[in-house]
Image 1 (cartoon, rainbow, N blue to C red):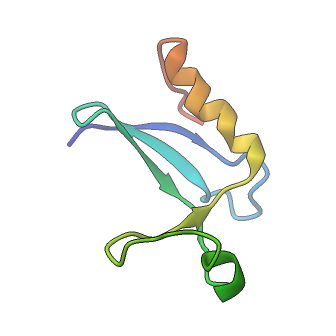
Image 2 (image 1 turned 180 degrees about the vertical axis):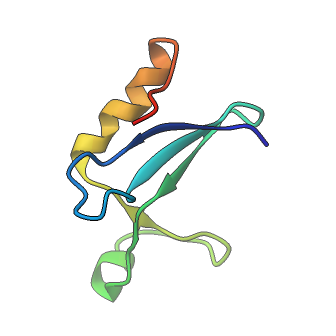
Length: 75
């Protein structure tokens, strides 16, 4: 597996999360973030038992867009 780190949340207090990766072999994104646990929020989504939901700040979307421009950052 060849994971390319696209970016970490620059405002994270610990500096380690959330983080967005690109798997260039599978052509998929991997998102590390806070696990959503609130039943009322989860009930608004249809989540299969083999999946989970993580939450990232809106400001992290910029790291998805970097791929469109031809490369990730080593943030």
